[in-house]
Image 1: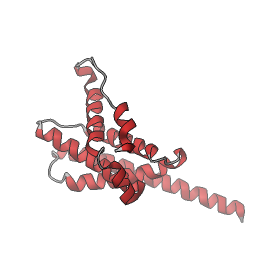
Image 2: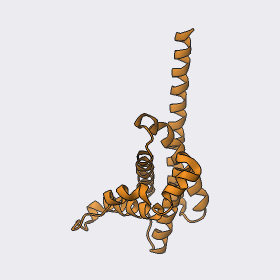
Image 3: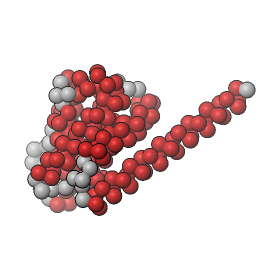
Length: 167
């Protein structure tokens, strides 16, 4: 299990947290994050070893998202897409840090991981989400894709400027 030991300790719920509706989103985030860590704890190291950091972490994030969606549905509840996306992003960031990806490279691989995880989640959750939730996920995926396109354009623009300076 090693890779998630420190994450699991960080994710322990605080005793005596107020059970009020105002903190509902924060409380749901905590629960979904903790469930995510538990869902992948036993396979994290092995999956990353088998598939490499990008695909391995994407698989783990998708696994956690699917496990949370199924658990919520079994209990007659839903998880707001923005909570699920924030957990996916934070989980991916923590895993990238755990496997030792340098800070300056995290942004480059984070979008790849999220896109791959969302693709897997979309396939696995096909037909499980109400139309409104599905639309919200599609909107968020489009925003992530747009950010990636902008990042790619900036990188290409920077490379062209460097090539012109070097010529």
